Image (cartoon, rainbow, N blue to C red; front, side):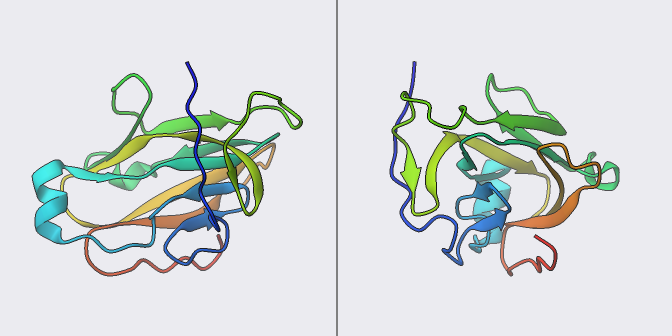
Length: 144
């Protein structure tokens, strides 16, 4: 099965968390604390530019209170998103940054706040640090 979508200006939209070829759509949008508490987190589509693999990891210090749910419904602390190869004919999903592969999913948390992420792009040995906004107040993302 396959899904398609149009994500507009995904890589330049200030409402999104962008880390290299990765986008957490809506990752910079604040959400009322009551909504986050009622649902245990918030939903964020993830986009990755074709030809890239990106590993997203919840740092050790927040694993007791946060997790990622993308795929078969189990909570994970590390997920690797492997986009379709460049030139893939099946990819009909796009953004202004070009064709992307996307995943629907959820960032779980016990309490609203900035959830830190370690993001490894392709073969990088050191992570890029970012934070997804899950609740009120935007997160600071200096090196994404």
